[in-house]
Image (tube, rainbow, N blue to C red; front, side, top):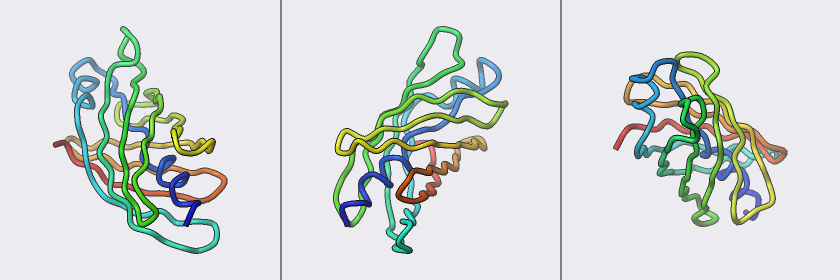
Length: 132
Protein backbone atom coordinates (compact mmCIF):
# COMPACT_ATOMS: atom_id res chain seq x y z
CA UNK A 1 0.00 0.00 0.00
CA UNK A 2 3.01 2.33 0.41
CA UNK A 3 3.30 2.65 -3.38
CA UNK A 4 -0.10 4.24 -3.83
CA UNK A 5 0.93 7.67 -2.44
CA UNK A 6 3.60 8.14 -5.11
CA UNK A 7 1.30 6.99 -7.88
CA UNK A 8 -1.58 9.12 -6.62
CA UNK A 9 0.71 12.12 -6.29
CA UNK A 10 2.06 11.75 -9.78
CA UNK A 11 -1.46 11.10 -11.04
CA UNK A 12 -3.05 14.25 -9.84
CA UNK A 13 -0.48 16.92 -10.24
CA UNK A 14 -0.84 18.66 -13.40
CA UNK A 15 -3.49 20.30 -15.39
CA UNK A 16 -3.50 22.66 -18.19
CA UNK A 17 -2.69 25.76 -20.00
CA UNK A 18 -4.57 27.20 -22.97
CA UNK A 19 -3.73 28.94 -26.22
CA UNK A 20 -5.46 32.27 -25.72
CA UNK A 21 -5.70 34.57 -22.74
CA UNK A 22 -9.38 33.74 -22.30
CA UNK A 23 -8.71 30.00 -22.46
CA UNK A 24 -5.65 30.29 -20.22
CA UNK A 25 -7.69 32.06 -17.56
CA UNK A 26 -10.25 29.25 -17.64
CA UNK A 27 -7.80 26.73 -16.15
CA UNK A 28 -7.13 28.94 -13.16
CA UNK A 29 -8.91 28.12 -9.96
CA UNK A 30 -10.18 25.05 -8.17
CA UNK A 31 -11.05 21.66 -9.63
CA UNK A 32 -12.02 18.32 -8.10
CA UNK A 33 -12.73 14.80 -9.25
CA UNK A 34 -12.07 11.07 -9.12
CA UNK A 35 -10.17 8.37 -10.91
CA UNK A 36 -7.98 5.33 -10.41
CA UNK A 37 -4.36 4.44 -9.82
CA UNK A 38 -3.12 1.21 -11.43
CA UNK A 39 0.14 0.00 -9.95
CA UNK A 40 2.64 -2.11 -11.88
CA UNK A 41 1.72 -4.96 -9.51
CA UNK A 42 -1.78 -4.95 -11.01
CA UNK A 43 -3.41 -3.44 -7.94
CA UNK A 44 -6.06 -0.80 -8.76
CA UNK A 45 -7.16 1.81 -6.22
CA UNK A 46 -9.75 4.58 -6.45
CA UNK A 47 -8.46 8.11 -5.86
CA UNK A 48 -10.15 11.49 -5.39
CA UNK A 49 -8.39 14.84 -5.77
CA UNK A 50 -8.76 18.58 -5.36
CA UNK A 51 -6.48 20.73 -7.51
CA UNK A 52 -5.75 24.46 -7.55
CA UNK A 53 -4.08 26.10 -10.59
CA UNK A 54 -2.26 29.41 -10.54
CA UNK A 55 -0.26 31.35 -13.13
CA UNK A 56 3.35 30.20 -13.29
CA UNK A 57 4.64 33.04 -15.48
CA UNK A 58 3.52 36.42 -16.79
CA UNK A 59 3.24 35.11 -20.37
CA UNK A 60 0.53 32.62 -19.37
CA UNK A 61 2.34 29.62 -20.86
CA UNK A 62 3.04 27.75 -17.62
CA UNK A 63 0.98 27.03 -14.53
CA UNK A 64 1.68 25.73 -11.06
CA UNK A 65 -0.63 23.33 -9.33
CA UNK A 66 -1.19 22.18 -5.82
CA UNK A 67 -3.34 19.15 -5.15
CA UNK A 68 -4.56 17.01 -2.32
CA UNK A 69 -5.53 13.45 -3.18
CA UNK A 70 -7.02 10.67 -1.11
CA UNK A 71 -6.64 6.93 -1.69
CA UNK A 72 -6.93 3.84 0.51
CA UNK A 73 -3.36 4.40 1.73
CA UNK A 74 -4.09 7.94 2.92
CA UNK A 75 -4.06 11.59 1.85
CA UNK A 76 -1.23 13.01 -0.26
CA UNK A 77 -0.07 16.48 -1.25
CA UNK A 78 1.09 16.99 -4.81
CA UNK A 79 2.62 19.95 -6.59
CA UNK A 80 3.89 20.55 -10.08
CA UNK A 81 4.45 22.75 -13.08
CA UNK A 82 2.76 22.29 -16.44
CA UNK A 83 3.21 23.87 -19.87
CA UNK A 84 0.82 24.43 -22.76
CA UNK A 85 1.32 22.09 -25.74
CA UNK A 86 -1.75 23.06 -27.77
CA UNK A 87 -5.04 24.90 -27.26
CA UNK A 88 -6.39 22.12 -25.03
CA UNK A 89 -3.44 19.93 -24.00
CA UNK A 90 -0.77 20.35 -21.35
CA UNK A 91 2.23 18.40 -20.08
CA UNK A 92 4.36 18.67 -17.01
CA UNK A 93 6.02 17.09 -14.00
CA UNK A 94 4.46 16.35 -10.62
CA UNK A 95 6.06 15.83 -7.23
CA UNK A 96 4.91 14.67 -3.82
CA UNK A 97 5.95 15.97 -0.44
CA UNK A 98 5.46 12.47 0.99
CA UNK A 99 7.61 10.72 -1.60
CA UNK A 100 10.76 11.29 -3.63
CA UNK A 101 8.84 9.94 -6.62
CA UNK A 102 8.14 12.19 -9.59
CA UNK A 103 5.71 11.62 -12.41
CA UNK A 104 4.87 12.96 -15.85
CA UNK A 105 1.39 14.32 -16.38
CA UNK A 106 -0.60 14.82 -19.57
CA UNK A 107 -3.82 16.85 -19.44
CA UNK A 108 -6.65 17.50 -21.88
CA UNK A 109 -9.15 20.26 -21.12
CA UNK A 110 -12.74 20.31 -22.41
CA UNK A 111 -14.52 23.41 -21.05
CA UNK A 112 -15.26 22.81 -17.36
CA UNK A 113 -13.86 19.25 -17.45
CA UNK A 114 -10.28 17.94 -17.51
CA UNK A 115 -8.76 14.50 -18.02
CA UNK A 116 -5.33 13.95 -16.47
CA UNK A 117 -3.08 10.95 -16.95
CA UNK A 118 0.01 10.48 -14.78
CA UNK A 119 2.76 7.95 -15.24
CA UNK A 120 5.74 7.12 -13.06
CA UNK A 121 7.97 4.11 -12.31
CA UNK A 122 5.31 2.55 -10.08
CA UNK A 123 2.20 2.83 -12.23
CA UNK A 124 -0.36 4.91 -14.07
CA UNK A 125 -3.15 7.12 -12.79
CA UNK A 126 -6.15 8.64 -14.54
CA UNK A 127 -8.40 11.34 -13.09
CA UNK A 128 -11.34 13.34 -14.44
CA UNK A 129 -11.75 16.77 -12.83
CA UNK A 130 -14.52 19.37 -12.92
CA UNK A 131 -14.45 23.04 -12.04
CA UNK A 132 -15.62 23.70 -8.48
